[in-house]
Amino acid sequence: MYLDPGFGGMLLQIIVVIAAVGGGIIFSIRKKLRNLFSRNKTHSALSTNQGVANDSDGVVDMLEDEDK
Image (cartoon, rainbow, N blue to C red; front, side):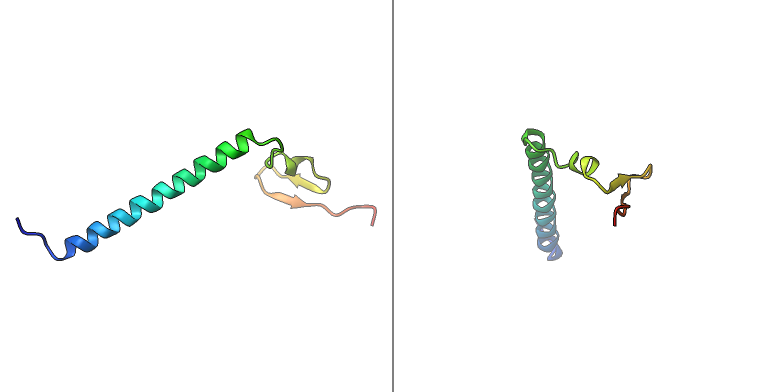
């Protein structure tokens, strides 16, 4: 059985990509689980703060205080 010299490099790249994608998936799932079980919800903090408004396009805009 003949293995091409480029096969080792290609195999190494496949292993690195699988490890990187797997790490990203694990990080994402861990972050979602942590947010699900945490007491203070970080995604709701933006909607309750004074001076922050969400537009219909989902962009958070900072509003100036009229008291100043």
